[in-house]
Every structure is written in C-alpha cells, then in structure tokens.
Image (cartoon, rainbow, N blue to C red; front, side, top):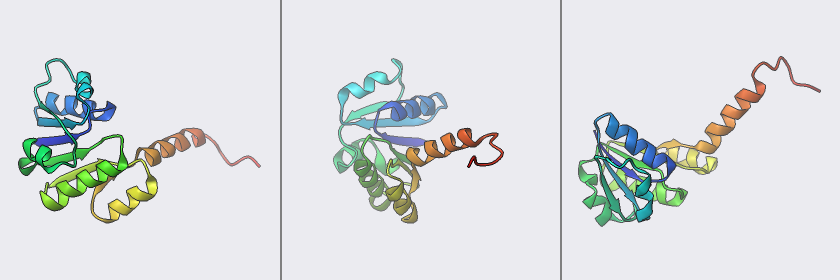
Length: 139
C-alpha cells in the first residue's frame, strides 16, 4: 500500500516504521524538520517538511496515488482539515485521523471519517482495569 502519514510525533514515527517494515510505501509529512530524527536511520520511506493542509505539500507527497492517509499531528484542527482534504478533494480510499476531543471525534465519525480518539480509548481501558474483578459497587 501507499501510505501518507501527516505528523511524525510518537504515533506517526511508530506507524511509519511499522508500515515500512511490513513492506508498504510510506511518505511522512511534518512541519518540524527535527521530528524526522525519531525515524530509524535506515528509514526506506520519504520525508517531506511541510504542513499537512498545504495542497502543494500533499501533492509532492503523492496524495493523488495514496491508498491510505493518516493524520496524527498534535493538533485536532490540522488533523480534521488534512483528513477532509484527503477524503473530499483527493478521494483517498482510506482516511484515518486522531482527534483528542471526544465530542468532535463523534461529529467527524458521523461525517464518514475513521476517527481514533485516544481520550476515549484510554479512559475505557483504565475503567476496565479499575473495574476488573469488582463484584459490585461499594456504597
């Protein structure tokens, strides 16, 4: 698959590294040049310095040929705008984005985007761990 990742923070570099290890063609875009230092030294993918909502940057990253678009910057607004550009303008078949705000995450799910909300996911996992083995609530 041809995968375009916007954001090379902890999640972005991990995805880029894992996907290239599995043989996928990966391009990573980040506005901060130092963000790419986290990638493995022999990273076989491409890196582009720029913002994920700039169409010139996205075109140079190959968005027209991307099978998957992933937006994982540290900013919900950037992720939402980048994902909408990928979905509505470039018709990328699979668009996944991270949104920290659970309310906004639900709104964008209803608009047809695949949204991962770490706030909700982590809260659910912690709740499961807290309640594991608890027979009944204490009063």
